[in-house]
Image (cartoon, rainbow over all chains, first blue to last red):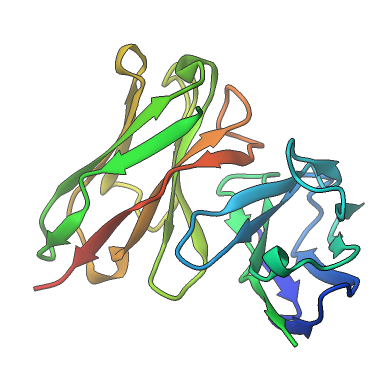
Amino acid sequence: DIQMTQSPSSLSASVGDRVTITCRASQSISSYLNWYQQKPGKAPKLLIYAASSLQSGVPSRFSGSGSGTDFTLTISSLQPEDFATYYCQQSYSTPPTFGQGTRLEIK
Amino acid sequence: EVQLVESGGGLVQPGRSLRLSCAASGFTFDDYAMHWVRQAPGKGLEWVSGISWNSGSIGYADSVKGRFTISRDNAKNSLYLQMNSLRAEDTALYYCAKGTRDGYNHDAFDIWGQGTMVTVSS
């Protein structure tokens, strides 16, 4: 199975900050990388698919980049509703696997 | 409104069985692959199983292979997960998720249900 490693595991930031979360795959996954946001007690929400494509309805302050083994999710200007846990997921091979999550907290 | 509604969770003893259901609405169900993804309490996300639009292609996580069976009924817009020989480590919130493709490979999960809790304990 492909291992996905996110960093950092947790992050404190303030409203208005620019934040970057990193996801690294244990082998090349081309651009088969998706990002999700999960708020407490809620289901995950797809933010970015195919490494850099913004899912419909997702604010443009979210962006994704990368290919191969290294990927990033960037939030350009944090809003109060962005404080949540973020997961990357590879869809290159079966089984699809997720990173361990990055918890984004208010500073 | 696009919606997935899971049901069938509950408390079950180790070794017993449970069948989860997921009712889909608001989209053309038989155009897309469907998946089950679970989340143990306080833990991350784990893909469990996926099924292509026509049930022609199915995949399972190694942790459930041989014990769980995914199926779908396109006439009823429904997805199922038959879970046998349940173990304590199967305790989790089980989400039904819609894929973005007709095949379950190379897929993202763009619509999620609210989840149904399965607790395996004596």
